[in-house]
Length: 70
Image 1 (tube, rainbow, N blue to C red):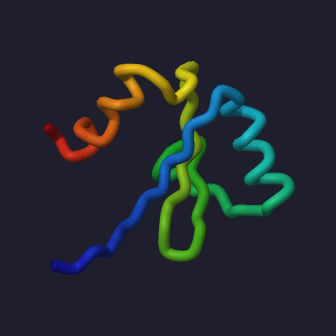
Image 2: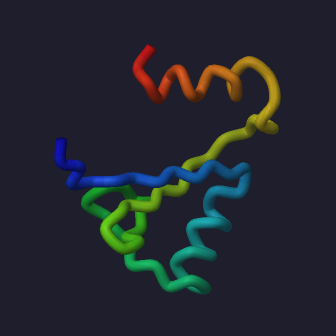
C-alpha cells in the first residue's frame, strides 16, 4: 500500500487564534484547496479545528473509534 496523503488535525478552543499563529508566526503556507484552516507542512496537510471539550469524558474517549470508522 502506498500512502500519498497525510493529514494532521489539531483541535483548540481558540481555533481562530491558532490559525493566525500558524499563518503569521510560524509562516506555514495555506492549503485552501483542502480547507480554509489547512496548512502545508512538508508533504502533509495540517488542519486546525475547533472544539469546546476539555478532553475528558465520553466524547474524548470515543474519538479513536470514530477515526477507525467503527
